[in-house]
Length: 211
Length: 211
Figure (cartoon, each protein chain N blue to C red):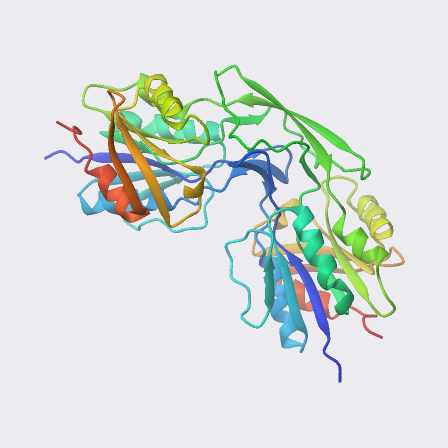
């Protein structure tokens, strides 16, 4: 029997503007941890690529720590060919400052303004979707505040995922969540409310996976 | 005997750009916690105004939770008149986005750019310094990457603090630190390397406080 190796991304990324300040979001890694725990219970070998979080991951998971979205991308691409599936629970920053200042940017007066030019980051799930081999599957997450279903469907296609888990901003850093699961045909196949443990178990039970 | 009430600010602040994304920094609240523990040991009644952190503060401290710099300012000003001293160990964001988007800002393509206009936040320590009554004292922190002493001295004057604790970016989210303490005359009175507990005890032992 071959080892089923599962890749989970988790937590936020940080995009530094200078040695002190960064862009990020409140993703806590709780969903990634719940998915890892459920996957280990099901006999998967789990690799977590995680941005900076304060939670602890299961001892049985291999954890690769990263800071920026580019680093998360590189770490994911490094192990993706050896994995059967990717569950992208992380919330990597879509944008990063176009320029990094090696010196802390000074505020010289209370009327100071600062204009920050941001550029797009690589889309990790889309890149993994492009490089899918026979039998590999990907599950993406979408967090939308407006036109949620429409945007989630667009993500599903653009990222070539098998499923999209759609949640809303109240899920961030919360113990509970409400999600809808959209399959590759764009159908909402499931609506789940409950703890992240409950949701994680349902995500891992999605069919057709590994047929 | 009157209660000596000490106000400590701790942790980062977050400045949200939309419901998901924010500006922040890696301040962990460890120095604030170490200061609170040392102050409680010395019989102070301690109020901590803290930004979002994952550490736990001493049970004997009153903790006021805030998110943004403006909220931290308001919470500090609310209790400052009743306190003997302020130790400003927090790292509140100097800037915030000029505009908040109620909808999550969409990335529509990989070539998207985003220009973010930031405006200055209120200077909490300077405001407390302006409103110092007879007998009240303030200790500020400075984190500088360039011209550290010169910048720290400018802060000391602008913020009307009794002391400035000067540290460098390696102190962020670290257990140990190296700091220099500058008194109101601009003299470096102390250089301390060690755990944040050791540094906290030395900061609380500063003279002349409460003479």
